[in-house]
View 1: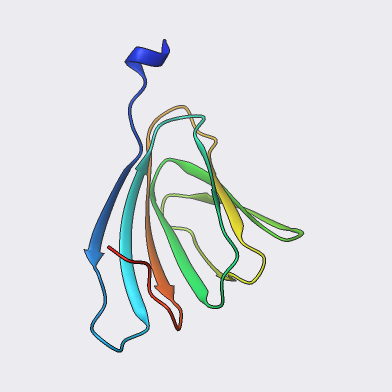
View 2: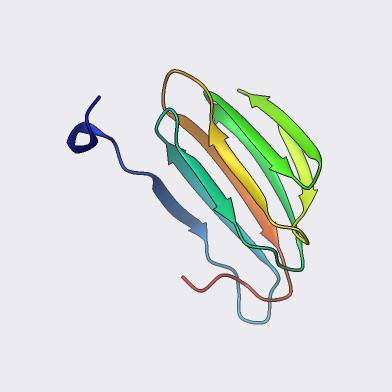
Length: 103
């Protein structure tokens, strides 16, 4: 696949959170081989793999998620997510943090 043929990462904000709230819900589709780093922040995330295979690394912990697998992690040190499968992956992530991501 050439760079011009590469599929973009798709992030859908399913629920942007309520004013004064602490929870957001995202759905992300990632092409094979794509890796994303997320900055450290106060909070937690629950990530469920809906399709494909994803490696999630936070600190010294690494989790390989396949369809239906879920992991919960603290966001204090940031984390990375990488599609390690041969096809697009899709995750659903719930973010719980005192400061929501602007959307």
